[in-house]
Image (cartoon, rainbow, N blue to C red):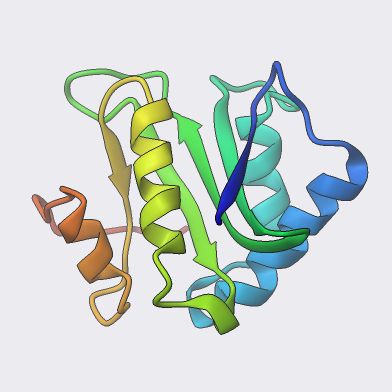
Length: 146
């Protein structure tokens, strides 16, 4: 049975739990991931450890083994930009296809107040899960990097 833990500014992970979530995401996001410091920044934002609107983290477990994690940050905006952005979601490589991602997505949708945006590479197989739970591709994102 999949169990979940929820963290936010009111329910903080201890330093060992936080490091485990960072390491988990770094390892299991694979080619869709970011460097550890960037993952930590998103987590710090969700936990309001840095000035932010906050957010939350959901992690999943089979027994004591972490099987998934999701980080959602609040944007502080409404109507023209979704109130939340799903920054990271990953399931353990050995447990993909077991419904863990769906559990994490549904829990995140239930917890989020307002709409949720996410960025996904067109070839990411998780895109199908996002569409199944109700996400649609409304825009093409364009970025100017400076």
